[in-house]
Each structure stands twice: as C-alpha cells, then as structure tokens.
Image 1 (spheres, rainbow, N blue to C red):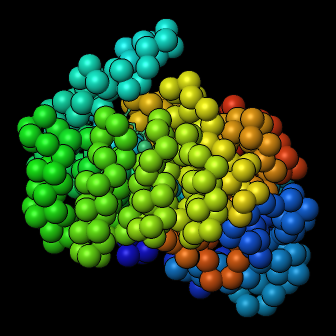
Image 2: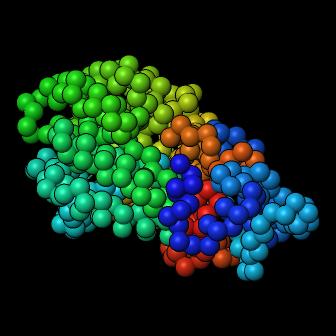
Image 3: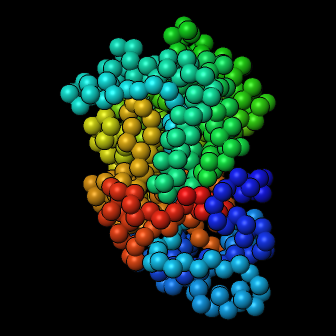
Length: 433
Ligand code: NIG
Ligand code: FE
C-alpha cells in the first residue's frame, strides 16, 4: 500500500505528495531516461537519451506522468497548481538501481574464509571441508528473527546509500523448514517496515543439501512436498533459486526440482556455471528468468543464452571474492544475450557489495559501454526479476530514482569507489535518504 509506505518516511516529499495530486521535480543538469533501448545485446553510449535541464512529474502514487524540459513543465505545473520541488544544485538523475541477486539476509562472518582464499585455498575446497555456506547456515539458524532482521536492515541501509531502490534477497542459509521460513519472514517484515528499498524475496532453500538429509533427492523431495507449499501458502516468495554445482545440486536433481517448482507456479532462477560449466543450459531449457554467475560458461552456453529470454546475470563481486574470471559479459552482449549485473552480496564468495563499483570494474575488464552497464543495473535487471514497472524514466513507470552530485553522467562509474557523489535515492517519488 503506497500510502503506508509514505507515512513512515520522515523526510521531505511526504507532506507535498499528499497535498498535491502531482509533483514536479527538477531541474536536473542531465536526466538519463534509458527508455527506448533494446532489451538484448550491445549498446553504444550515443543511444542513451539524455535530457538536459530536465524535470520529471509524478502522481501521488509515485508513478511518472511526464518527463521533459523543466522550464516548460514548470509553466504548466504553475497553471495546474502542482507541487514543485526545485533542485538548486547540479544533479544527474538516473533510474534507481536494481540489484537482482543478493544474499543480504544472513548472520555470522566468513573473514576467515576470505583470508584463506586470498592465501590460495579454493572456495570449493573450503566448502568440501565443511566450511563455506554451511558455516553461515549454522550462524543463521542460531540467530533469532529479530537479530536477523536487524542485520539485514543495516545492510539495506548501505544499499540505499549506494543508489539501490529494488533489491532481490534470497533465503538459502536456513536449509531447514523453520530456518528457511524464518529468513523469508525477515524479508517480508522488512518489506512491510519500508526500508526505502523495494524487496523481492527468492526462496533458495536448494542452496546446498544440508547434512540432516541423506542425499540430494531426499532433500529436494522435502522441499517440494513440505517447504514450497508453505512458502506459497504464506505468500513469502514467488520465485525459487537452485545452486547447480559440484558441492551443491547435480543437473538431474536440479531439473526435477525446477520442474516441480514451476508446476507450483514459481518463477525460476539458477546459480549456474560458477565453477563448472553446468546449469545455464538447464536454465534456458526451463525458461528460467535468469542464469546467474556464468564465470565458467562455455562458448556453447553463451550461444544458447543469447538465443533465449533467460537473463545472464554477471556477479563481478563473486569473481573478485573468489579470485575467478569475470563472466564473459562482452561475448554475451555481442551474441545478443540480455545482460544484468548484480552484487551477489553474501558473507562468503562476494562480501564486497557496492553495485556501481563492481559494475565499473567488470566494465573495465570486459570492455562494456556505460550504456551497457546502466542497462544492466536498471531495466535489464528489472526484466531478470520479471518486473515491468521500473528500470527506466518514462511515463507509467515507478518514480524510483538515484541522483548524483555531478554535471556529467560519465563521472558516475569513474567515481564509483566512493558514495560521496550520490545525492539521494527516491522510492515512488519520495526521497528516502
Ligand atoms: O552466489 N554460489 C553459491 N552461492 C553464493 C555464495 C554463498 C556463500 O559463499 O555463502 C554465491 O556465490
Ligand atoms: Fe549468489
């Protein structure tokens, strides 16, 4: 309910948005609409629509009603009696960033794993020795709902300050009926609480097979017969994820799980091709929303991803966090795939966070244009989550924005190591920080 969302915002915008049917915001030195760009394939910076001295008009439900030149819009706003929020500094406005793959909800710390990986121990070797994901599972099972909520809330605050307005969050560190539901409940509670970020929950109960189950099949059967019906009943998530990997689930069990979950009405996403090239083919065959990681995808995998509507999600923070190659983003785009970029924020493989920084590093190594990066963290990421109401600045979309203290959009990725230049994030027209 949008009104409730706004009531809990202490900041400016709230009063005006209730008093007036429409709010005009501007002028912005540059407004990048990102509209009219293709969903798939390579992009040139020249294709970005940039409106100088721009304004954006949105209604009381936080939906964009007009985008254009501020001065012209102001004349009309005065006649109509709309609220006018005048910006007095030089700002660049972009659609709010969408982080379409995170594990933001967890307890515990894996600094020891990180130190071991820096010193040369492999991620999969740590996992096989009983550490890795299972370490976080133990800490997350022990944490109370309130503790987990507080930890996640703090991480979301950082995300918000980095310009993120929509954040996917996975379960997957519970791996038991109770603990998975606890994680999903944390996400649901935070969504109700209104953190200033719209949350998309994903059930990743099939992260790895927990030791309580004798084999993958037994655990998958438990998930299908017990957990997923309950997740559905409580309306805690409408999408499921599975980690297809040597230390997690094999392709056969994964296919069975995906088929059954799909029959139950869940949308699908996969952790695929992270260390070994399997998972992405299955993702395409199952018409999954996305196949994420892909650090070790083959040329063949790139081709079939490119022929599909399954979004290829690059997670540069995981490449950096385990010292592996980057997802072949350039090849994927040149082949015609839909590329999104996400943080994978988690305590193990990708503790880095900071989507803009990760994206700029990936771009430098993979040779991506700024347009390709911006698309990958906005409307293409929205597509990966099945969301059609956000990701561009255009009439009918949500007024979710991020504003930067600069006169030139090229400074955004250039200065990505700091958040100093981020002026604010706006959710449905309300400035939330
Ligand atoms: O996306 N690869 C599997 N899952 C997570 C890592 C989880 C962890 O290491 O705690 C990922 O990299
Ligand atoms: Fe992940």
